[in-house]
Length: 512
Image 1: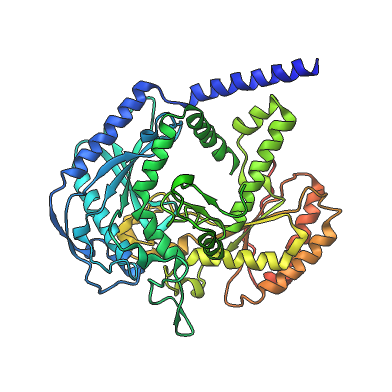
Image 2 (image 1 turned 180 degrees about the horizontal axis):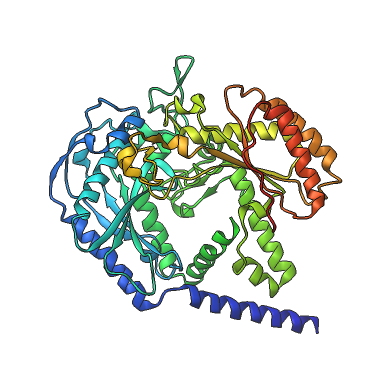
C-alpha cells in the first residue's frame, strides 16, 4: 500500500513537472522570432563603419576608473566575431517570463595596446567600444530602445540591452544583451590570479598587492567564448540537462554543494593541479574553475552568499523528500521574499560617508563590495555563533543607468531636466541590508542571547566612528505581539550603542 502511494506521488510530480516545463517554455515560433531578432541586431553591429572613438563620450566612466587625462582614443573597427550565445544557442533551455538573447561581440585586437590590461585601461576602452555600438544602433528603425546594464552586477563591465522595434507577442519585453569578449587580446601569463598586480594604485605600505578579482574580470572576457562553446555543446543534445536548467530558472527567482572547489574541465583534458586549486581557494571564497582552467566563474560570490545557496538547496531537497507531491508547489509555485527567510532585517544608511565617497571606486574590487565584506565581518564578530546565518547586501545598480555619468546618476525625480547637480551613484546606492537568522528558536526565549549579541555587536560597530549609521527599516517576520518585544529589545540596544545620537528613520512591521 505504502509503495503504491509513493509511486502515485512520483507520477503526480512527473506530470506536474512536465506541465510546468510546457508552460514556461516558449513555442517554436516565438523562439524563431527571437533568433531572427538577435540575428538582425548582430547584422547591424557587423555593419558599423570604422570611425574614431574618443573617451570624452564616456568621460564620467573614465574619471571614476581613475583615468582622467589618459589617452584612450582608438580607431573603432567592426567586431571580428558576433555570435548568439546563452540559452538560445544551447537549445531548449529558454524559460519565460524573462527572456533575452546574449550576443557576444569580440573586441578587435587593433583597438588595444599590448599593456592595456593595466590600471583599468581595458575596461575604459571596452566601455567606449560599446558606446560607439550604442550610438550607431540608436539611429536604426529596427531598434525600439537601448539601455545600459552591467555584466553580473560588476559596474566596471557595462553591457547593452537592445530592444527590437518588432515585438514578439509571446515574449513581451524581449531584448538582446550585447556582451563584449576579449579572446586573444592579452597574454594570459600577465594575469596570474595569486601573484600579479595589474592596478598599480593597489598597495599596502608601499608594496604592490595581487589583484585577483581585477585579473579575473579581464580573464573572464578573454575566455567567455570558449566557456560558452563548451556549455552549448554539452547542453545541445542533452534533453534532461536542458529541462534541469529550465527548472533552475523557475526555482531560483522564487527563492532569493561543494567545499573544495569545482572544476568543469573535461577529465581527459584537465590541466588544473591540486596546487592550482589550493591557490584558488586561498584567493577566493568560492571556486568554480572554467573550462580553460584560468578563470574562477564564482569570483564574485561571497562566503555568506554561498552559505545561503547551500541552505536554499538543502531546504529544497528536504521539501521534496518530506512533502513529496506537495513539495512541487512549495518549490516552483510559491514566491518567497528575501526578508521572509530571516528573523530580522535591518538597514544601515551610509549616505554622506566620506570614507566611501572619497575613496577610489575601483581597485582590485569595487569599493562598495569591500565595504559589504567589512560589515559582514563586523557583524559576525559581534554576533559570533548566536545566529545561524547573516547576509549583507549592497543595493544593486539602478535599472536606468546613464553610462555618460558612469558610477554617477542624474536625479530622476520630478523635472530631472531642471536639476543642475548630479549625485554620485554611491550616494544614491547607499544602503547595506543585513539579515539575521536565529535558527528557528522562539524569539522571546532566545532574547537573552540576542540581548548579549547586540551588545557585543554595538561595541564592534562603535569603531566605525566616521560612519553616520542609521536604521531605516526593521522588519520582524512574525506579526504576533510577542515579537514586538524582540523589536523593542533590538532597538533599545541599537540606540544605546550603535545609534547613539543618530536618527531612526522608519520602523516597519511586516506581516508574512
